[in-house]
Image 1 (cartoon, one colour):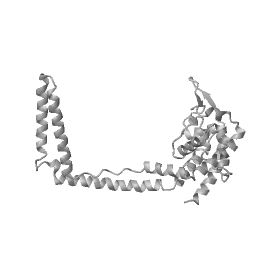
Image 2: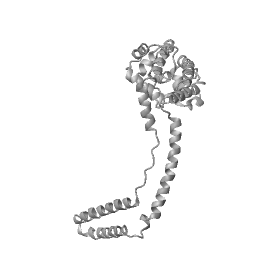
Image 3: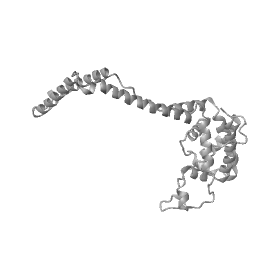
Image 4: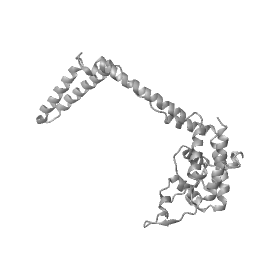
Amino acid sequence: MKKTIALLLAMGCVLSLYAFKTYEASEGFLKKLGISSPMAKEFIWFSFSGVYLSHPGGARLRKIPTSERGGLTLEIAAFAMEYTKTPDFKEKYLEYRENNKPTPPEKPKPMTEQKKEQKEQMEKSIKETEAAIAAMPADQREGMKQVVASLKEQLKSFDDPDNPMFSADMEQIMRQGYEAEMENHRMKIGEWEKQYPTSPNNMIKTWLTEFLAVSKDVDFNAQLIEDENGRKLFAKTEYERKPDKWKMCFRAGKETVEAGRSFAKQWLEELKTSK
């Protein structure tokens, strides 16, 4: 099991009974953890958006008595909840939402334009190859001259009215392919709009729901052992195979997680009435 401590993230998802304290009054935990307010906000954001990080002040976290973790949970929860209501959090979410928006397919250019561009590229290649030949040893020039001759033959085909590569049929095929891609894109946009509505509340609900699901069966009395490399592992193989989030809850401790589960349920109830 990883040695890094993720107490902050495990507690950052919960709702405090004192969530309606003033925002400033909820920042007392920062000194205890030795982190700044901006850093705490980043951890909260990364946690809710699905990127899990371990707190850099692990040494301080390990020194926090178990009896104090419940109170610390309340402070962190109040801070987290209030931060999710700020314009800064909303702005981060909207940027995150936009970054997850499906990219539309590129509309094919008219065949005349494609032909023009490919022809110009071919002419450029011929010119560059001819210039390179002049600097080559004499015994290599003949082979490259044949390459240039082949390129020039290809260049002539661009103006052949019977060339199927630039026919109306080919343009129609490309257009149909684009329309099929656009239909698929519209479906993806519909899914994106459902998954990423303009309010971040859906993301928060998903996170809290997942926290409740993953933390419901954490065995806080699980035994740990050390392997030959000194790494701590769960004695039970089935526990070692548990998701990282389950293990994060184990590290956070019973007091923290039980309080978190209670508060998370309250937060979800409030979100149900929010837009």
